[in-house]
Length: 253
Image (cartoon, rainbow, N blue to C red):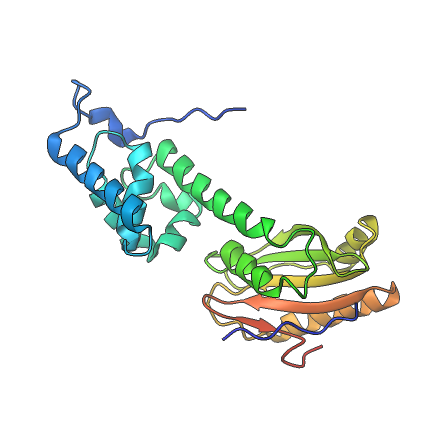
């Protein structure tokens, strides 16, 4: 369950075809069963929206553009079997996607367009917004960007004197259970941006947002650096698969 918001003081890319499309019928015409299936699925999507569709059918809709003349259901099922759900498919690393038979440049481009669009839409709801009034949108953004990653990522949200978010930056990438963080670099960047406050965010790929001792120690170091420079560390959020932990709400800071 999400915590309440804490109280603060104040070049056109060419669409390439996958290997799978190279064996499409030379006539250029889709077999009728494929064309009919695509037409029916698109009609269902337009009439009822995405909610009634299972993940594999939503994934089929994305794959239609990448693979124009083949049945994409087997590939959609293979992707779902490998990664588990729609979110994990579109956020999967390129190298792991290429391990799936039938995935090539065109499929990866389509998946990453969807991922980028989701990130940009979520981010637009928090930038230049007061962090207290947009706290739920902030949590949604963090989950969209980080909850389904297979490795740890550390981000910093920089705020001005009115607690408006002025920058959102990735500071470091790590492994499945560790990400290197350098408090001096965090503080240095805050000074460059003329920020007055920070919110730290990182994810736990395990899904459990419980902080490690290393998380607690690092947060203490950043807090000390902020205090010395007259800045405020508002919170440190750890993003799990379906929930998050707030250092401030849970009494760690």
